[in-house]
Length: 108
Image (tube, rainbow, N blue to C red; front, side):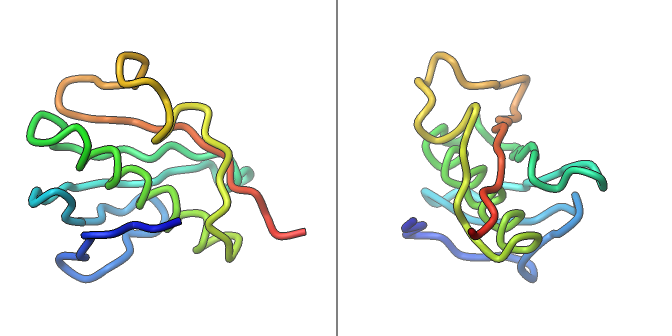
């Protein structure tokens, strides 16, 4: 997975649902990835700022999901229910927030 044109702003990973700030497409996005304590594999990744750049928000939400899976499983492999490849008109956008739904794929 290539993240390209990304820069962490304000100190890196958020972890455990804490806010993370990343920059894509020249826009700073604030995001989180959250899961339940008993099921870290299933998660939601959300970012605010979608009105500034949909494509940037998509990359920022992907980034949040990847960070989550690396933190808990040591891999960036994800099966997305709603994610970067979802048709744009089927994305979950509420207000100015984009949300992805995914499952980390632990190493075999």
